[in-house]
Image 1 (cartoon, rainbow, N blue to C red):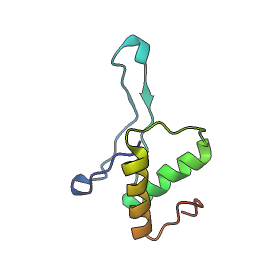
Image 2 (image 1 turned 60 degrees about the vertical axis):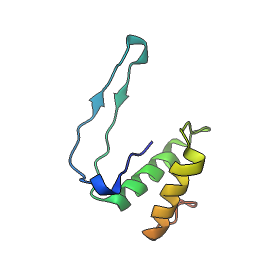
Image 3 (image 1 turned 120 degrees about the vertical axis):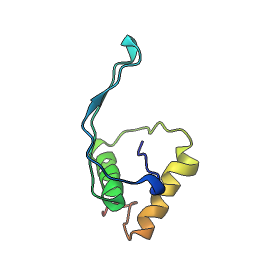
Image 4 (image 1 turned 90 degrees about the vertical axis):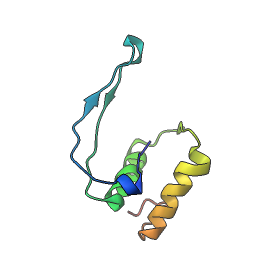
Amino acid sequence: MVGLHLNLLSFQYIEDLEYTPKAEFEGYFKVTNVKNEEELIKSCFAYMAEVKPGIYVTYNGDFFDFPFMERRAAHLGLIIKTCEC
């Protein structure tokens, strides 16, 4: 999921990374660098529209993550429900 803490927002360039805590949990993470919060939200929802997963696995996504992103998108004048951003 997307990580964003408004007080710590620095938007520094970060390269892709590999993190494998155990051999059976191999992981490669593609990092998308953006200029600001608006681009972050657009990028996140554009990726979800492109991939179109059948299920989103989140921790408290229904009650915090998605409502928070919808509120921030509305504050920025973005329309998320129709992916017009």
